[in-house]
Image (cartoon, rainbow, N blue to C red; front, side, top):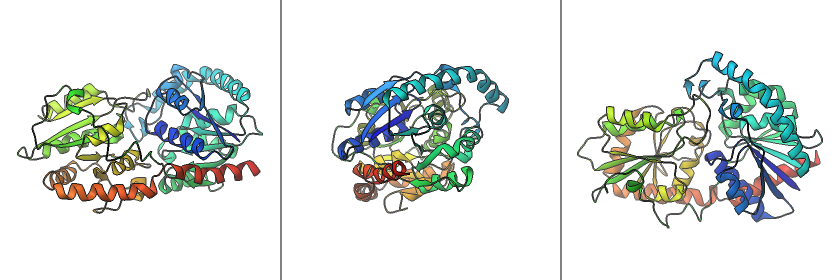
Length: 406
């Protein structure tokens, strides 16, 4: 069975890294399932897919479509742009949307898949527009659809064309059923990680050099937030928490990641975050690395990994990756993240958006190396059975077979 994956870009964020894990799992499983990929742009996703011996092609996304997004128009990124601006962008993107759908339809027809599996909200819509009706379509939901003012309406309008939806957590699945209707079959399939890559053993990145900072003094506890620069990922909360930590504690913070996506109104710029650090008086205590191509190496360089999302996290891939690397984790509460964490066993937690509570947790771990070791050990024990990559094929192949029979 030929499974065609559709992704809106060629960049490498959490959704794309999870997609690579799916394709790698299918390749390893064999069983006559052949993954292939169409991406909306060239980039590391396409190169890594080809490195897995997955046939990958590019149908370039028009710039107007790439910039269009509703996360910052009342979605999880807040109100960085008005609904009027969103509507204007939608009108401007309409002609290129029709052209893109035509080009994508031709590319899909050339490949001749038995099933199309779309990754990304906009690609769910283009996928059903461009896929022949005899070919079933599977949506992979990695966001809370109910929080997206435009995309929720578009998906509801096309839900009858979706054979089944896969959600990356039970929380996302519940939201999808509530938003898109009970007629849609939604099956939770948790993300996974490569436990050989994300391992306690292996090289660690020199975060100080990457952030153009002097080497941290011996005994410094390194605390980092690894995420795209999406506004709801909690960078402001993290910086304010660092500012609230007593200065006598030897702690250095790191913001690891860059603006991967190009959607307007949904992301910080690094200079905004640097300016905030400067205004808080912690410019000498926090480094900004920009995008890193080796997240496992970045995690191994940290003593504490902070997850600070201010909105419910659909899954929390960095939590799973940090656990697999046996790092102590502090995670914000709720959402899909709550399904993979046992508080005070394999991670500490803090209320979403509460920088003072986060500061207290960081200070607690900074002064308790034995607690950091225990949390890291329990995190790895959690990751080994729950986040192993082979599980993805074991759970997805029965779904594909059922859809194909139907």
